[in-house]
Amino acid sequence: MPNLNDILIMLPELYLVVAACLLLLLDAFMALKERPWLHWISIAVLLVAIYLVIVGQPAQSVTAFGGMFVRDGVSEILKVFALLTTAIVFVYARPYLIDRKLVTGEFYTLMIFAVIGIMLLVSAGSLITVYLGLELLSLSSYALVALNRDAKLPSEAAIKYFVLGALASGMLLYGMSMVYGASGMGGTPTLDLAQLHHVSSYTTAPKLLLFGLIFMIVGIGFKLGAAPFHMWIPDVYQGAPTPVTTFIASGSKLAAFGMAYRLLDAGMGDLSHQWQLMLAVLAVLSLAIGNLVAIVQTNLKRLLAYSTISHMGYLLLGLSAASPEGYAAAMFYAICYALMSVAAFGVILALARSGFECEEISDLKGLNQKSPWMAFLMLLAMFSLAGVPPLFGFWAKVLVLESAIHANMLWLAIVGVVFAIIGLYYYLHVIKVVYFDKPAEGSVLAAKPDISLRVVLSLNALALLALGLYWGPLLSWCRSAFGL
Image 1 (cartoon, rainbow, N blue to C red):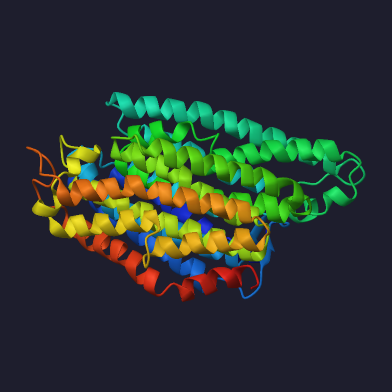
Image 2 (tube, rainbow, N blue to C red; image 1 turned 45 degrees about the vertical axis):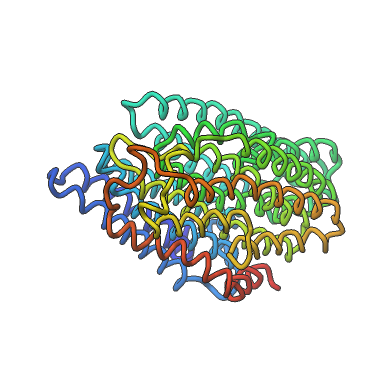
């Protein structure tokens, strides 16, 4: 039976569940002219949740509900940045939703339920909690992608996302069932990740265990958007409303890292010599497909989609090191990528207006002549994504490459460096269009974006420069979460 201590450990998650339900009631009973208040209330809800996560964080790792929920340093950091990026997405989304008459309570409540899924996922202590968190995040995301029901592209993207997501969830669940079965051959069957950590030492069915591990990695690869499980990313990124794309590109990647860490290190850590090579192969495929296909893209959202695939390759470099140093570098990279992608999509949202989505690279022609500040913010986002020093993205790449070298995978680090150089091309192409092409008729920025969006976007993009110059404290926080 749950006790008061269990409830206190899960207080941020329970608070968000109650808040989301209250937001649904508010939306139902609010007058139309009062609906804009939902936006500010939702942001306040997320900021309070960040406070609860940080203030209530215990000094040592603790568990609740019989070990099904873990609260430790890793979950704290991932929750803080998942909540923070979602709050930023809310700010960026407001003018976009108003222009397209999509300001509904469903957007805010579904986003909050998706964040609850992320928080459960990164705190999972059991295979049941992993699946519960993943499905809560996934089902909310499917609905968010189809938010604009009157448009054809979002509905098509949502169906593709749902079908492929259901397939990946089925494979993950199948892998979990195999691992559960293997744990019962030679011992007591268990779903607890801490107990599964040692299952390879006593199970009488090692092939069944390895079979389950392979299917679990397929599920992880899909959620990360790593090749060859990346098929959904370009269509979903392009078809979804841009605020939803921004959330999927940032928050869900933090969740995917958390899921990978819990399943592979906490659960299958004894089999690290098996899954290291699998992750390395996924990393190489992601780097190759992501960077090479991005070169030929003309749609900015599809370019950022293939960019995501390549960045997940770098994140897998850190995970494949299978060491606390590698996990810290991978988490640092996940946080870095979340902030970079939110900034890049934030510029798109700032430039979009009713009847003009600003989704084509050609839409950015001559941006520097019309809005030098927006052009500078896009430059910071693109250069950070490219890993140009001294921006934040450069140090994130350096750390995952260093962790791969320390794990005796020099060949993998060399592949990472080669594709980092190739990836420079398409980021520089965007900057060239922004700064050196002549503006096309009817192109960007006919109206000034929302003031709150401008302020938060400026802080977001400048943070990429500030964190590039002063990244030590964040890295120390990540390293301390893994006992370094």
